[in-house]
Length: 209
Image (cartoon, rainbow, N blue to C red; front, side):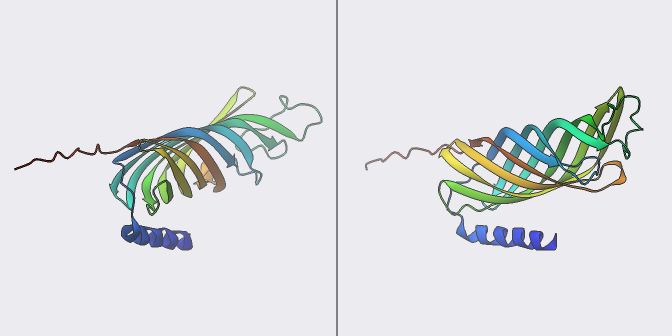
């Protein structure tokens, strides 16, 4: 973790001197999210599909404040012999089956800092560190288990500018959760559209004496 934080600080310091782009005042992201998640600490990640949205307010060319929200959905298989946090699933478990499927919804509500590297005109890589809450809701056979605990995301991404007000984003995060007294190491990748709020350039008029 210390190595990642040192790398983010290095990028921040470099960006302060090498910024070449015009800085948007705010950026709004929305798109598809895929999470390789292990919300019940089974040591086997399951692919969950969903959405992610984020708002970045830029206070300097090298620093933005981010609010990030995501939701991912799918079915997670739990072992019949070790169903925690669910109770033993008999008689709901299929005969001769070693696992049962839990309908799972995973949400995150994270806030933190984003450090863009604005050296190039069209391509903007960045690093981010976010903290907040994560929520899981699992349902099986009329039984529902849910938990809301600490969540953290550490990741990197890049925006490709299509127009001054529009960009395409690709992002990958390490997503840590702590559901049901366990620690889960997950990953999340997302892609989608970025709407950029930029200042309008004032037209200068020449006056003759």
